[in-house]
Image (cartoon, rainbow, N blue to C red):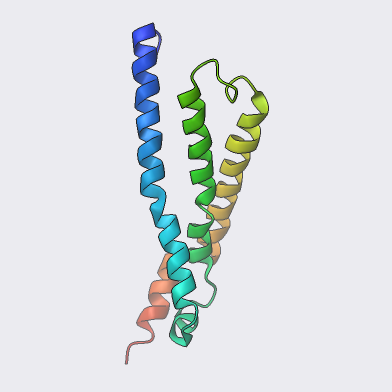
Length: 125
C-alpha cells in the first residue's frame, strides 16, 4: 500500500475480506438459534453441564462488531470520520478484541470441547 495504486488495491482487498468475514460470521446467529431451540430439552441440559462452549461461541459476536466498524472505516476512506478519531479504535477495536480474547481463554477452560465429547460418549448404552 506504499503507492497510490497499491493503496486503492489494498483498501479494496481489506474491504472485501471484511465483507467476507461478516458474511461468514452468520454462524453466530445460528448458535443463538441452536442454544435457544435445544435449551428446552432435558437431554441437552444433561449432556452440556456448563454450556461454556456455547457461551464462548455466542460472545464471538464481539469480533463481528469489530469487523463491521472496520468495514465502515475502510469504506469512508483515509479521511473519514472513524479513522480521524482515535477513540473509535479503542472502543470498537481494542476493547472488543481484548474481551474476545478473555472470553476464549476462559471459555476454553470451562467449555472444553474434549470434555463435551467425553460427556456425550458416556451416555452410550
